[in-house]
Length: 66
Image 1 (cartoon, rainbow, N blue to C red):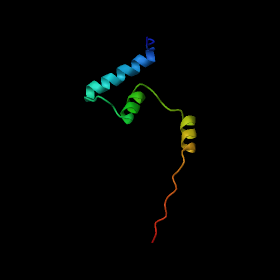
Image 2 (tube, helix red, strand yellow):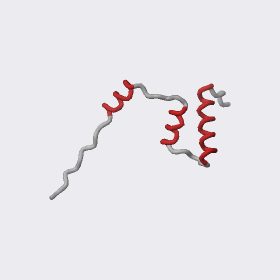
Image 3 (cartoon, rainbow, N blue to C red):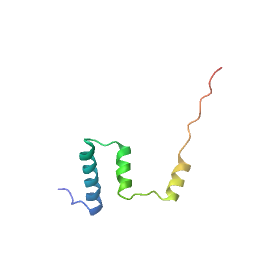
Image 4 (spheres, rainbow, N blue to C red):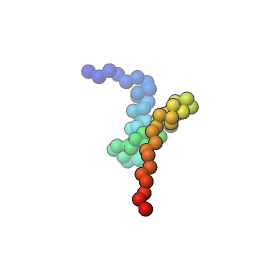
């Protein structure tokens, strides 16, 4: 048997369901879900953003043969 949802979980599920109904979408994209989460008040801290940006590895560019 599943555990009851917390207030935060219920708010998130309701926001997703509302979005799906309004947009006529069965499956929102991850970008759309992030938008919904931000509308619920999520804000990434500046420190977390800085740490994330510094750990993202840049792909090396390939040299073009002339």
